[in-house]
Length: 201
Image 1 (cartoon, rainbow, N blue to C red):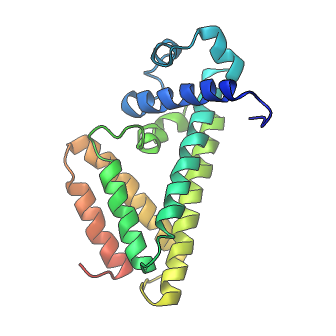
Image 2: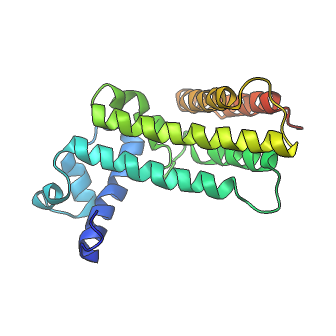
């Protein structure tokens, strides 16, 4: 967005994205029509097309906004002072469990909700999802390398492979939690994570 654009314009665009994130995290992308988003945001239909060329363009912007915030949260967690890398990673996965459950996730489970759906609907949205998830794996990889270097972690295999395995593990657990309406898949994922990283209970 152009930095010179009036603050009010930025606020309307941001408000549309915020309303969409909350709604689509609950219902999915296809199930939510523009009217529902516009009604929730209190924005006329004509104004929507001032900011977004189409629903797909809106979805792409939604995912980019979501991952920018999510990656910033990961960065903050993995830089917490006074903790080892192992402790920071445990905090990250605990935060995942706390925010990605089957209960109301306040829009924080957007990637889990839309992942498989948008990959088949829109190439720009698929690529936005791919960039975002790659960013997560990049950060986990760097954390594993740093943890091994400082001695708080011990892993078997290359850090990136382990990072990919961890992300896939937790992504799958998130889906199963929603299916079962039970947090047991997260408990199993945490136990497996402790084994992979050789963390104490």
